[in-house]
Image (cartoon, rainbow, N blue to C red; front, side, top):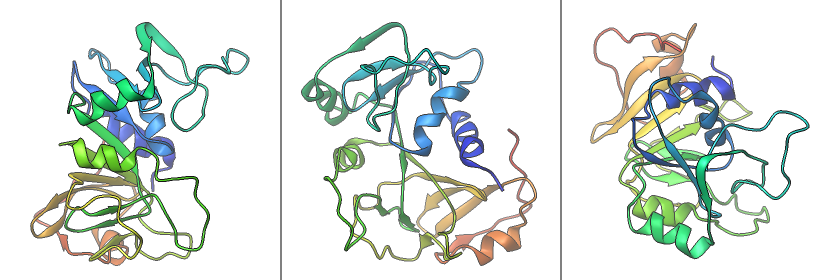
Length: 217
């Protein structure tokens, strides 16, 4: 199965030249390390950065330059820094072509839950609800199952929803899937993972058509 970097590397293959892309906290931030050769992408962070580069090398960090997850980042030539009101005007104005988010649960109709676990204190919902309400193209990066081996790809989310019917694609440590009216459509499987493994790890409706290729990273 893929590790966190493998998931990010596979999602990076979805990037297209000239896109503005928002990266959520967690696994999505790693996508900036795997931009395919020959394309130019502008990464946006909701706290007010445009033109983020890969993570800095040890000893080269700038403590004043952080992403939405409070991780130190780099800025590419021509990058800009602005206040959060302008950042969210960019998001709400649909000026971002792709949003990559982490999730605790995703339902097979595209619902996403990624901001709160009941009984656990959270500082707030962050910008995720603005992102899922405004974005037309949302890819979720997540583990296929939780630490107990239970599926996080469900028929219906059990946690408080962040957005309804908004996710377009899910990339996990086991598979790549599109969200369709019939449920999760299996497109690719991770190296060493069988279709049967994916079926057993997916609680929601899973559509399997023909031979499912292995991911090429």
